[in-house]
Image (cartoon, rainbow, N blue to C red; front, side, top):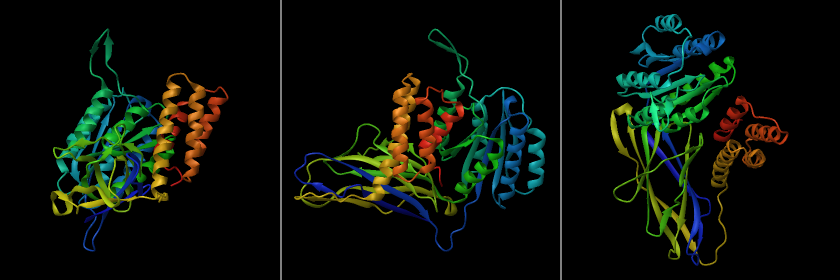
Length: 426
């Protein structure tokens, strides 16, 4: 398995007379399978909410979706299942798939809804189970919940008791360091979208929305299809820039495909930067956008930086492999004329849609309904520019409701968040 690495500037020409020029660098990463490469075994943990609010059709449809998922696992794949409510328990310890019917029977027997929602305890048990089967496998967790984590009681300046949400984010960060990927599924309309988005973003996964119980199977299958296509794991983008070229100070790096995520950087001792990518898929390109500034550079074709991917290949049990170093060039010219790249421009607009929606949500929380509606309209127009008609419809509908003096429902807010992060028409 090899890494495919491409890069392009939104405008490859730079005016030699300018002392500072801003550019967006799009970096595309994916895994490429060789003729003899096989699909990697999966090490999947399902972390499922069985609180009282899941009683009835919700828990029934989740069990059905889980059963179909188990039927899709192959010989050599591993499964574990954790259920949580007021406390968490392992209902299927980490094991190689041998008797799917027995596993399904055990899940049906033990997954009954009752109690509260302590997400962190379930997440902690899920990480523990995943760690039992990581060797030579793609290790991922699907975390499904229909509620909010329980917050600590605050008396003056002291927190009394555990803060479930804070603990969840700490665990997601721990999972990322252990090369585990966490995707989250929000069920119904009362889950905490900020929390589940952050867990998925930190955990290198994706956020899914199950608005109605009958959508559970579709969303489980979508996430399962993604992990089946993973070819390499623990990917890091290594970025170094030459003197007179620097990253923007505020939010310099973001992923724009397959989901939009603000990516944190880790400065390295040699002055370069490492950005965690997590699992690399074979048929889904990861596109990362870096916001850079170029200072005064001499005329001609100039190297402005270097790119490399560090990764693990579970199939051959090797860690810390490096792709060939790739130089990034810019053409510094005396008579400047733009040489714009339409694909990079598409990525810039995708990120703009996300950030415009974020601004709208912030204005709404501040009570500025007019400002929120205006930003949502702007985001809807941006979505149309990139051909994302599904997101444009969702964003414009929310804007129109705010302009009419209506409150946005929990479902509206969640659809808006998903529309900001993904291309809905796909």
